[in-house]
Amino acid sequence: MSSSQQHREPDPTENAVPDTELGLTEDQLQLLRHGQQAVAAAAPGSTSSRAASRASSQGLLLMDSSSLTALGHHFDRVMQSIQQRLEYLMEQSQIVTLSVYDHAGNLIDNADAEIARYHDIMAQIDELELDFDRIAGIRDIVRGFRQRAEELERELERSGGGSSSRRERHGHSSRRSHGHSSGSGRRR
View (cartoon, rainbow, N blue to C red):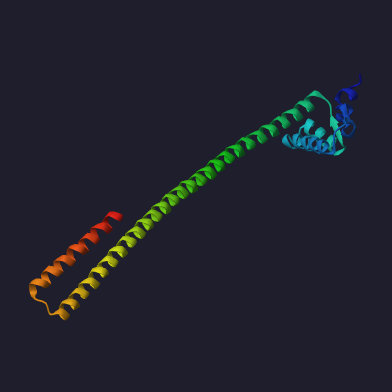
């Protein structure tokens, strides 16, 4: 061997194949080329970096073991980065989901509380309506008593009766009204 052959660097493209002959899709070719460029940019100035950059720009894939190892490590790092991002996003997704469930749970709890409050209000309204009806009934009874009392007083004034007959009639009327009142109380 001559000394000029020993000092000559081997042509990196000697161990390279056109990337279009690898049977890859256009998307896979883009990823491969981008990977070679990233490997070249990771070690600027080195022989392997320059070779990878030149091969990538010519549409070639370096097939030597060190270039393929570097490219494999690059894709491992990219995949690890993607995996970490996925894990982070999954955690965030769980946090959001729990937050939504908590919010929904709070809404449900609030809705349950509002429904209970509504039922309580409706029960109070029912109770007030019953009280209103009871009071209206008592009011009507009182009106009836008053009308009877007024009628008795007018009748007594017309008849000009004595004070003793007035008491007896008044007492009798009072007992009769009392009976009506207690009868009303039983209907409740």
